[in-house]
Image 1: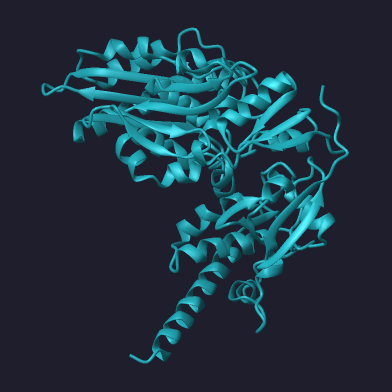
Image 2: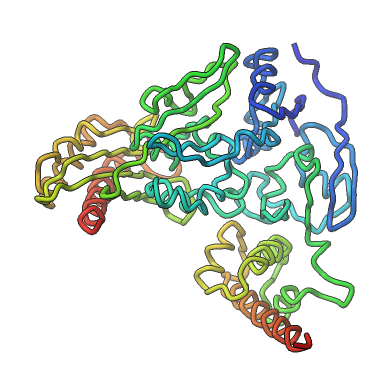
Length: 289
Length: 173
């Protein structure tokens, strides 16, 4: 049984925000629809109004700006996946993208949709958390910036107000000698990750670690930024032993859930394994960089 | 307060090269529109939540699941469905190859696979087996085990390349 709702096309961010303001929490934004449409088809989401931003072309862009790469919220996964700038400047994002869904999903799904949907095992939220990306949101009173650490609140919940629209995400461009790695545990390519880990590390001329970032997914209600644990690597030569210690430290206090795909115990056991693998490969790549 | 819709939306689009307009409810997916409004039942409904790819169609040059696109979102778009695949001279080389290599059994996934494979061959004339499997990852088949589908796409790709070479030879230099 189909759910009934109104449909309005918004041709700009301002128009979408004004519709949100008019209709408040009854309204939902639809962009790629790859998460919302299944919920609607299954009768799990019952919005009164869908605001379609697919014709807001101003939200579809990839631009380099002041040491960052800004990506418009409406940019399709496929476009990001094929972008030379993304491969060159945000290689961690480039590595994670082909793991999202399947070609049909990536052709239609948007980067802003993945972030605003805030699935705790989403690849893009995990990359955003690892790199400390900044979400730019537009509301009735103008724009504001929300760092990833504050943007993801809990399961499928962000710091976006009901009248706000996510317009872009800004990824910091890390130095060229950074080694990155994205690893996820799935039963089949394209599935939701059971756990995932994203790492970005740098090595000094003496082979010691000068910077390390780490994020985990599938272990908490939001992507887990584990930079505090990763920072114990700084100043050290990245031996297998110290990487293992950092991976274990990153997983102290994690509280995964059980679901039809995997038990909480399995996730708890796999999280440090994938943290270790992501860090190890990131260091190998940094050494070659 | 929003009044629950009884209004229908007027959508102008192009389907398989023909200008088409239709009325649809705001809640109707493109899949429902194709099948129930326009009678184009070649596009199949499998899961209706974006997992199986049975409803694959081309929107512009992009392969999408029609169940995850609203009918209203097709406004101004060019849609290509399985009904637009065969030409006036008969089956498309992909369809012929699927027949010859028995790349189907029950057939419900076949239109989706054909459209997805067509989208691949539109871009790449000589895809590797790995590339074909990666590209077709969004389409599920519970009968064939996929091998015959991959062989069919390889066979069609080979024939399309040969036909392309023949056409080039015909052009006077």
